[in-house]
Length: 75
Image (tube, rainbow, N blue to C red; front, top):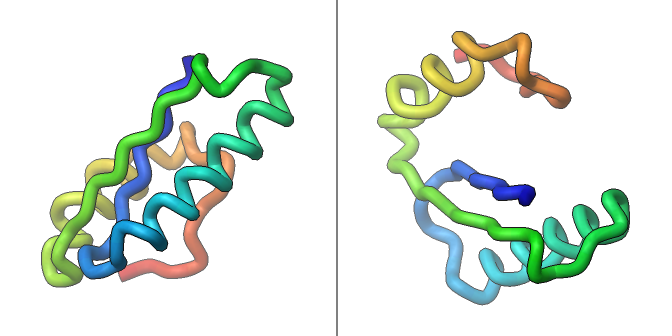
């Protein structure tokens, strides 16, 4: 615990994704006062034209009650 899933557009290189994951892990371990061994992070990449159908509708629009940070856009 916790497990974080980052969903984003396809196209960033592995170094950029690893830097992002390192930042997420650092933030979680500091804010929850836990060790890195307790955190897992997955990255799922999507084509931009599939974003609304595969991410926005099922994970954002239909789950707004779970969002602590809502996006500043609507498709």
